[in-house]
Image 1 (cartoon, rainbow, N blue to C red):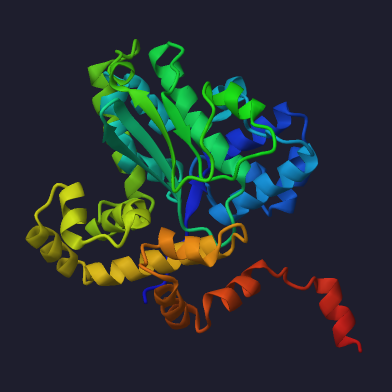
Image 2 (spheres, rainbow, N blue to C red):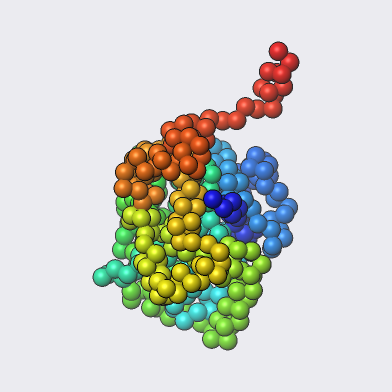
Amino acid sequence: MNPLPQRTSSAAWVRGIAELFAAEGLPVQALCAQADIDLESLQHPHTRVDVDRVSRLWEAAAQHYARPGLGLDRQLAARYGKLDLVGHALASGPNLLEGFRHLDRHMALISDATTFSMERDPRGYWLVLNHIGASRPIPRQRVEFAVLTLLTLCDWLTRRDLTPLAVELVTPAPADDTRHRAAFGVPPRFGQPVNRFLMAEADLLQPIPTHNPSLWALHEQLVEAELGQLGPLGQSLVSAKVRTEISRMLHLGEPRREDVAARLHLTDRTLQRRLQAESVSFQQLLDDTRSELASQYLADPRRSLAEVADQLGFSDQSNLFRACKRWFGMPPGQYRQQLVQPAPSAAFLAAAASL
């Protein structure tokens, strides 16, 4: 199995999160230190932050916030959800539908640990977000803030107050969903396979007032240039695109190569040839993606092993058991214990050594 790539988020995105916490009166400097994030480095545009550190930042902030709903303020999400160059590109586009067709690739510039896709529905389009590549559970606050940021982006780009037709979240139902209803405009459905919200096609076709064809083309070039600096996760390697599509499809069952090829607008034979040129097979990419997601899902004690197996596209738990033995050298339950047990502190280790 190939070494799994390190997933990161942009300095602009993490800086926006830090500014959101400051607006909520939280001790940002202490929170960043707790998450091992250099606050000063976030001022440099090319800084990237490991996604597990971003999760630790949200975890620390949620503990200090000491009440539900951190990140569920529409005005704060609109102000501090910093998309940087990607946001400028979207603002130059003709409408939301056309802009979001580019976002599935451009999302890596914001965070290559987040995937975006659109799914057709008789009522419009589902806008789908998924988090990948983490080795610890994704805090619900991080998930819900990301979805809300995308929703408020629709308002900001069109200069209209748009309301989704439905919202679905992977997070468990809270004791009180009042803040969720206020933030999203509709009561979300919790505990769903993916994070997504449904927008009417008419809303997605609303013209963007700041549309400028010349700037749209220029920003597209700038985004592509920035993506080229990210390495394999940002480059136009077919294998990277295949892994992204696999991660999007796994919850529906094990994806077939021909189905992934169709989603990439390639024939199966063309996809196979291009993967061979990159010295990788579809089965290897499928296995690597499953392994990466397995570490993330098993680190979350809220997910049962049956749910993890289902989310990884396995037909039953026995397949998950065999895969984990191959990936991690131990069954999934034992691997989960290893992930969720806190590592001993330096003070504890020093005390033990003195005995």
